[in-house]
Length: 265
Image (tube, rainbow, N blue to C red; front, side, top):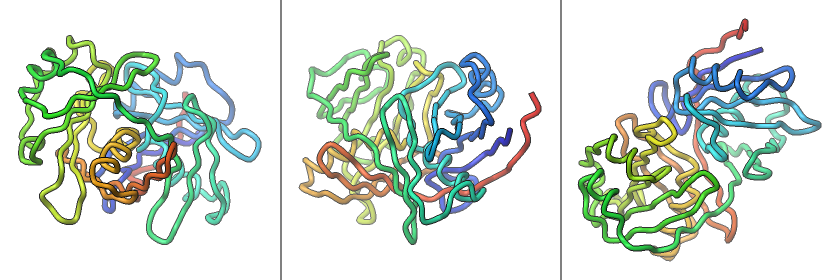
């Protein structure tokens, strides 16, 4: 079994969001995959098993399985093409808990075909605001099977970049994940964001592809655009190209392999 460490949504090593990618010869128990994810100790580790012309794909944090992960999907596609498991010109089909996902290569990026998810405006949630030490101008919510995701808009990217959460309070707030976003003051980008999810073992995720399933329709509606560029303002930083097409979004980025290894257990 081959194991890879890949920086996703990155143009050079040690940037973007690191993901583990484990290419399996056959399906493995959930308990085993969780132990491998804990050993990798990255925000997500992806597990791939060939199925017909596509791949079964599952994602695990060090504490739990998640139903959708963008950066580990991009890393998985990068590994499949890098290892020549399919031709560079072929589209990769992933079977996941969020349905069928596809990855394609173009001249510059790997493009992921993901579901579009739109948050619904709700009243401001005091527990979140206190934990993040912010006063948002918009609060939206999307209900997931395992809990609620919140999207909070601030009026400036300076405020987004300055957030210093109380993670214990954030964990106690009941939110599964929180996206904080604002318009970008840098003309190269349309919006900025940060992503926090201590409830699934990730205090702050460096670059979150799945968050852009929510950010793309949100900012597409706000800005009147179908094509945008998002900047995730984490310590490692990352750039995600976004295209909105109704109930689907296309998320684009690059990836860099840091190491490959053989899993012996």
